[in-house]
Length: 467
Image (tube, rainbow, N blue to C red; front, side):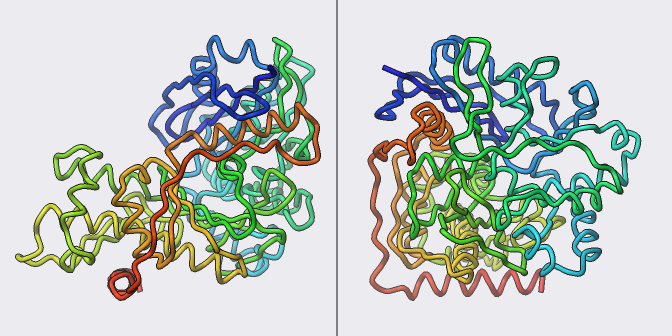
């Protein structure tokens, strides 16, 4: 029985699953923590991967890595990190992103060029920040990789080996200097961002191309970004929209055509299968619930039942959930706001409900942005740590005004990486069919009045604070 491993190297941790290559059944699991920071030594990711995969990766037939998108890994001529990697959630590059948008002639030009308008999270903005604030380190940068690229290279031997650094079209599409529509790097945009410097970039592999082999002989597939990995793990089709409630919140869908949103809200990404993955990202999702639970001095598991005790609308409380700045809407310096406080509504159940509603209203706006790009949304799936509470699915159906599918909690990013590894191992035209785990179905209320009222109050509060 051939076996494959999938790696999810996320912001918070590294997860490894080993699966039966034919059925997708999970046979073994591993996990290791990552440092809690917005800039991290790439070596910490490699140590975590080896810890999570200890005793597992030596015995599989193929492996693939799905990693957090956008992170900037800068290497010198010897292939060693020049500095700690800047992660997607490091917002110091917000001013650099705005400058790049202006220099090219506005957001429409960027959307046309690479399908995505630069914001603080994108690699291209982090390169500009590095050029402006750490020019000596920028001068030493001979090669630029993404987190998943770097880990894939380590699996294949890394610096000093014959292995070539590679990436895939899904992760490359999140850099701001690779065009999904044309399938090519925009070296002119890279050079513009990096003040004339032209570091080497990884070769972009197709969905079935192989990156190399591990020292134990396992095939190493191309790998991809974490959102592309989740799409593969869930087996989504056109018409499906995934709302992922992890550290960040994302709304993404599979599309047969590239998208180009001049407002910058929808990132026109590619996926890991040769198609496209338009995506809206927020910086704040599960952290909204965990932070609220901490403030209420309850467990995260206790927040959902507490929220259920409040009526829709949380007694008039409105929570703008921008706890770490925000990417969509583009408010990198924002803070969270709790509005509508009155003596009568200042009770823990209302606060718990307001936190859930605020998180989901932000994602409902993201869903609207996808629809505005001609992306079909016949089915909504909710995944991620914050989806575990039944109250979240129930409130989501109310706010989205659509039925919601909540698959059983699973490591879908790691599963997607494993499915990609199985696909590369088999060499078949399509990925292997792996059945989706059991899912809970939540029907939308027959009367959408409450959902519309919640969203209207949220929109009014946001306008009052941010215009």
